[in-house]
Amino acid sequence: MRGSGKLMAAVVLLSACGDPATTGTSADLAARNAAASQSYGPAVQKDLATVRRVTAPFHRFEAAEAAGWSTQITGCMVDPGGAGGMGFHYGNVGLIDGVARVDEPELLLYEPEKNGKLRLVAVEYIIPYAAHPRDAAPPVLFGQQFKQVDVFQLWGLHAWIWRENPSGIFADWNPQVDCAYAPSVEAMAH
Image (cartoon, rainbow, N blue to C red; front, side, top):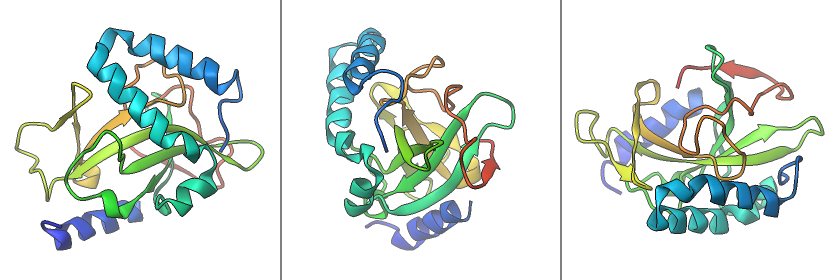
């Protein structure tokens, strides 16, 4: 890993900081997501289908943990400005290597549910500034430019593939996600 010391420092910095959809079936959600992604063209649709396929087993949080997404990177995140939530970010530290691959999202986002389970809602791709400097051109995936996330010293790109997002599939925050059932809530600008 290139710059592993800086990369691990970024992971430490980040560290400081279920079930399919309950409304409708997974097939219903997949159909809505596919319809929403139509405007992105066939290549992006294919990439979104790939990430859905590889993350489908992780609706069960225990499966995600067993596969390496076991590091809680953040608490349950909500936007203090009211743009919505993100939920908990769980990372696969072995994938935080400075390269974004469609089929290997570094983070899985989970929303806490009333029944105490975690619901998979999105993925996030991250590239630490140590691997791709802040002043460089933004990385691109799904035809979308990554956004600078200075609070965590990284580039990030969300894909809301498991929870419909009225703000857009690649928006940072989802107004339909909240942390009402989280043990503790972190309001963070991201």
